[in-house]
Image (cartoon, rainbow, N blue to C red; front, side, top):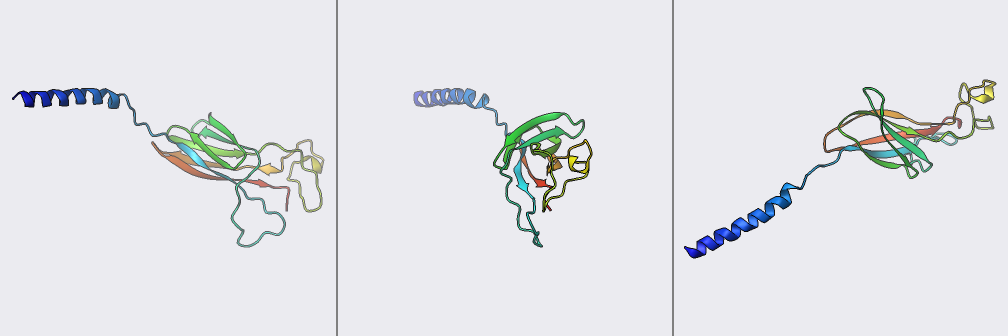
Length: 155
C-alpha cells in the first residue's frame, strides 16, 4: 500500500510541475504575406514565350494596405527581391514600389511614358513601375505573392 501511495505522489508531483510549463506556452502561428518581386523588363527584342523573370535586385518597398480602407498596415524595404511580412488575417493590397529614379529622357531604344517631362509637360513620369495585387491572408498561414516591377522607358 505504501508503495502505491509513493508512486501516486511522484506522479502528482510530475504532473504539477509539467502543467505550468505547458499552460503558459501559446501556440500562435503567425500569418502574413511572403513572396518575391520579379523584374519583368524586357531588354531588347522580347522572346516568345518570354523567359522566366528574375528577382528584382534593386531597392524596392513592399507595402501592405487594408483592402477595406487603404490604411497602411506594414511596409518593408528589400534589395534582393524577397520579402516576408507578418499581418493579421484579412484582405490586403500588396504593392511593389520602386524608388523614383531621375525623369525619363528620350534616347535611342527608349520611349518616355505619356505625361513625362520629355513631351513638354511639367508632369514627370518615373520609368520604373510597380504592381499591386489583392490577397487574402488566412489565419496561421503566409500567403504567397508574386509582384512585378518593370522599366516602361525601355522598348
